[in-house]
Length: 107
Length: 107
DNA sequence: CCAATCAATAACCCGTTGGCTATTGATTGA
DNA sequence: TCAATCAATAGCCAACGGGTTATTGATTGG
Image (cartoon, rainbow over all chains, first blue to last red; front, top):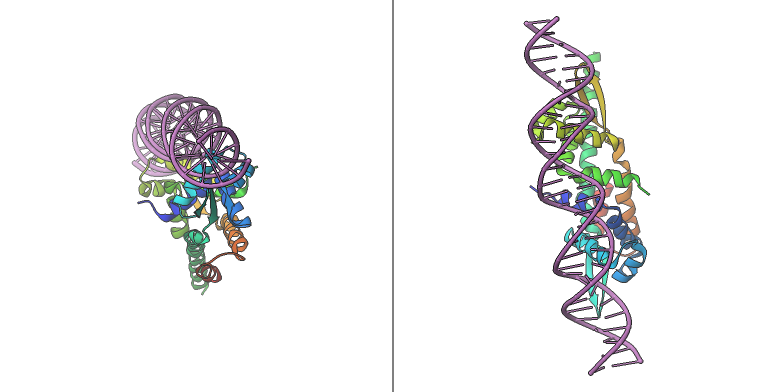
């Protein structure tokens, strides 16, 4: 079973790829050329990363003449936030249980 | 430059390892043996994953006799939450469908 | 004290991944 | 029309990561 989290975590795990995504979040829509100029890797490498990001639903592409514009799709981050919140929730509920238990034991 | 996010994303990217962490969040402290029984991989594999999780600060270990107990360290998730929040924040001026996301974050 | 149990380490294998260069295809401008 | 530009694809390679079995080191129980 491959969950949505798998995709997201795996996609964002690579620093170069995550930097590209961060840049799209910070600065909005960018062409492949603009992204390549800053990425520190070759254009094909950037294109490959963009392909992975797109596959994960983290970016959209828009073709205009011979250039392609990419932009971040923030809603794809929702499962990530949900997961993090869930983990925190589980942890807190256990903590509450423990407090509960200790209170009872005090009596 | 290897940031804290790098560690976290890379560590949580593997499904087996993430499942181990999730179990520790849900059920609290567990021995290596207990984790191995559920993990679907060998004990050395589990130990290796626990080592990576520990390195990332996501778990603590406690030795008791010949067994080792591991527990989740929720604090380590903070940078992940911050990062996600930041990405959402950068986005705020642009977006289309941010509302869902903000609802989740408010909770 | 010896056998058994528990977890970590060692040594190895193999698939995946991220990088590269070269090329192709499409679009533009002169 | 033809050269130049932009991005994607192809093909290759080296490094890394997650898995395995075998072993070691500690601790416990009989």
